[in-house]
Length: 139
Image (tube, rainbow, N blue to C red; front, side, top):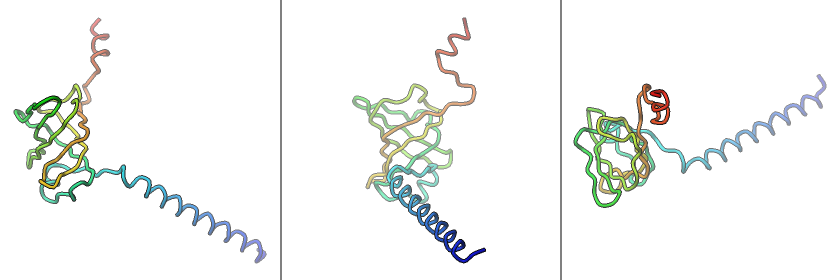
């Protein structure tokens, strides 16, 4: 192989590698604010994240823990049956939200160690069917 041709290939390879590293760096910087880490209640109790860091908390809503306050404010407890975390949420809860049901709450820990949720997602089992589908099957 001619030395000139080899140098061209190495140059093209080097430029491609630099472009790939640059694209990955831009993507990671752009996604930094939207990435949230998932915690179970035990992980959250044992090693709490920095206050204000966006995280997701997953577990089961404990029976008897749902307390509805003024307006749309709700306080409930999420547990992994080892540890529990109290969640404060101000908003409309999903239709599937109820005691004994799995949830994922997105939010932050405040300076007082309370979890303040900005969004609550209800999980359902594999047997779940939307009401519209269930009604159409009954006919």
